[in-house]
Length: 207
Image (cartoon, rainbow, N blue to C red):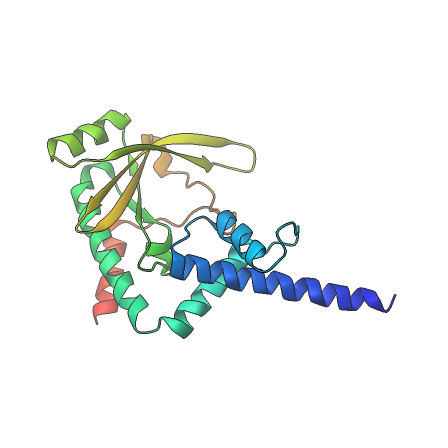
């Protein structure tokens, strides 16, 4: 009986260490996927087979703490640059009701982060044609989202580079604007920001 509390404490400590190392990998090495970051962190800490992995929201909290502690001067500047790039991309895609999501919106973006946009169109070909007509080369991708706890959907995506920033857009059907997919961080509907909100965020930063 006396050993159980110590084991429990040791498990908690390992879970925290994995979260901290995963956050460092995301901040410094540019690992974007929470699952990949956690598995790499567990391996580096000598616990590759552990089932005691932290939740994504725990890793994100450690990422915020790491950026505040070690990147206090540079990260805010990088975030502003990425939000500027996001706003430019959103204005380019204005006809498709663009919404900013991900780390550039949440504020955890760093030097390795992409700009993630959700677009809404009758067909993905409309977005493809918009890019082609503008002479912008892009890669075709697919991204899978959970719409709720039971239903997932794979959607077309395109990735391109603008002013040195990687921009990834996912094309949702028109009715996708009403239902935000679930976040991989906390399982809640993903936060989305309109052009007006991104403009407001940038105005606050520059003030």
